[in-house]
Image (cartoon, rainbow, N blue to C red):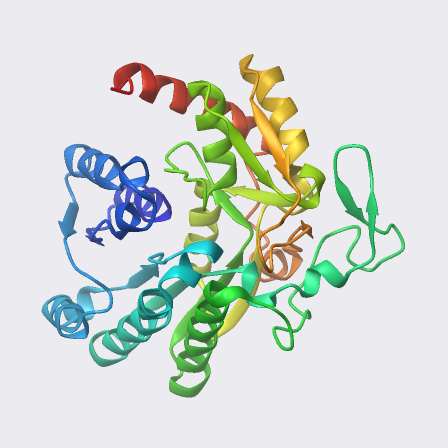
Length: 348
């Protein structure tokens, strides 16, 4: 989703875009989560887009691609990942290979062949592990909420939160490794690296699955009439959601005046956040769909109860950037896109 959004955005600005993807998302989450439809659409609609089927774990192939294009590369947007807590526990070597070793391969290829390029890494709020769950929280009717007298209440969690001494999940640990590597290449080698610790990244092109992409998968289940399982926390867990277009626009602003090894929390912030129960209600209000769901007692290990990103550090560095998409508009777009997709490609 983020790669496709970036391809469209930078193509519209006149960049030649090289997309690297091998559709491991289908391996992680099944055919419904395949990136193939998005990839074919990019190839059909963008004249300055070239797709390469390559695995970020294969340094020789990545290195050859970067060597071929060399100093023509002005920006690298690294959005490849295994993004699920649960999946990482099934195949830890694959998870770490993609998330950590893949990031190292891209950083090293950039350093060797285009060291002045801007390097964007899509990290995650999961680098903070379960420390957010130790914040003082209050239970409201449809959501958990942080205590009103806590410093994080008004704007969300900022970059001062530690990434140490917490339960991360293996996915979170592999992303910590990649996050710190990207910081180090910026600070040690003087490269222009930006680390964006995202909340929930979403939008109408998201191929959501049960193990990843909760808004997209929630809408998919509602539209298809498929049962949905909520994992723990009474369905009141809160996530901030940032539209892929707002995120990629943030990448563009960073590229205009990049920094070296800078870390940013980036998400919907107080502007765009929602609980599970609130999202289920809003899907009914916006799309007329009634979701068949059950709330399980067990939550996913290390999963956040409440997470809202404080984006003020990024806004202070790049004051011309702002949000365009709130949670209602995001949900409306996902509902429309999902209904259209199912009408065009009905389940067999």
